[in-house]
Image (tube, rainbow, N blue to C red):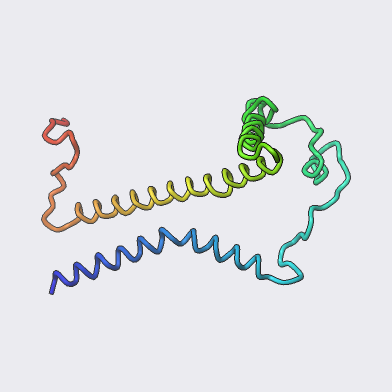
Length: 165
């Protein structure tokens, strides 16, 4: 009987792990379908990019829509044309010309979408799965260490048997 309870606990744990593993994917799909299926008027605060006049003391939507003329607040190694942002844009343009030589602007858009809408989220999801795996492994280790009869002096580390002092 105890063996069946163990099997049930393992199955329950696998279901919970699977649920948390695919939850972000289902949420993205559900939000995407919701946005596509929603009718007019859109349930968002804005329906198009606003047109605001330029203000010299702060950024407005004019800066977003037409480029910012204000002094940059981020360091040059991040925001300058030869910094991280500029190098990223240049790299995307280069990859766009390589991917679609006859239509480099469309290639730029394609590469931009693949990198930031496919590869980057896939990397983040992989890191999420790794964190989930490590969390569960730590919980299981904690459960084993709290078992009755476990003295807590045994070590599973590579330094087993060393005098620590």
